[in-house]
Length: 101
Image (cartoon, rainbow, N blue to C red; front, side):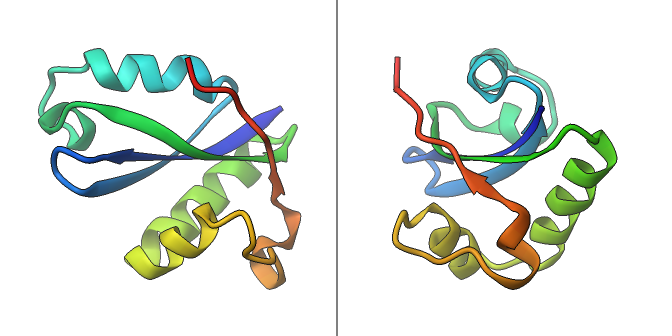
């Protein structure tokens, strides 16, 4: 199963959207990343939302790209709100409860 995940860092007040088969492990990788890519520039990433997408990786990639193309912090903040109703393009997402380490 592929998931869309949303990370947040208080240090820079930034969000990041990604996809992975294991978002819980992926957040750990983002936090040890020291590269030039987006998450490597900031520290203290926290997992704030996880959505089950599909067994098909291409669908997860398509959803990740769609969310990123919106370039909308407001949209991301809606998605992380557990009371936001996932409809339209987002109806295929299934919010996953998670436990923080």
